[in-house]
Image (tube, rainbow, N blue to C red):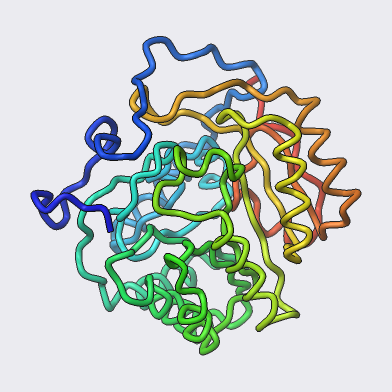
Length: 324
């Protein structure tokens, strides 16, 4: 775990502080590129957004929608959905594309699974996504906490479908999957994020093959549970590399795929290499359909948990959320 001994437990490092010790340094962006019209979003029903935020704070819960500055937050929150982020809001890694804070995490809240289950029940959610920060400080990477959350939700909301979006468990897949066998999810999601060539720069501490192996091992143990994987484009990859990545995901028996445009959280984060055209997103969509994934969503504002229930039921990708 790459943590500075001088960092206090619970202190959040963001922006330049977070990027200070990554292997390949990020040069702060002087001028951000202008966003094309199709990448813009609008805030709708702000009162509904605030209701959900207030409920989450009451239950001491976090959402990746807020912590990762997702552009779809107004759209999803106003629709009464959220992707819950468990095990705190401090990550042990320093990925330069991600807005979640880095630092030395607090101890796990043993009551969090109960709080989460109560919130899912109160919101009457039929489909819930649970993700987490990386917790390399834990021997099991947090797998037991995931299992506890699934168990608690199933006890209070037995008809709710549960998707988990997990970290790579630092290569400890066998331990994690053994723990998850206590309470397996309805969908197992792990994001590969980018092409192998960019891993050292964009995913320090992660390994492309480990991520593929995690997805394959889960499918081996649970052949009837769908697996899912998300990636970003616009970080410096070329189209041919994305095609190879999609081929890899198919070879490793992934069922659902999401592809979206990378958006820079701040000038201290990894820069946007380019805004990928709608035509290129369409190329990925068509290639994924040829590979016969159960479903593939490829569009600028698509995110891994974006309308996750609709993707599970194999609906078509929604049109990009464009400002009128």
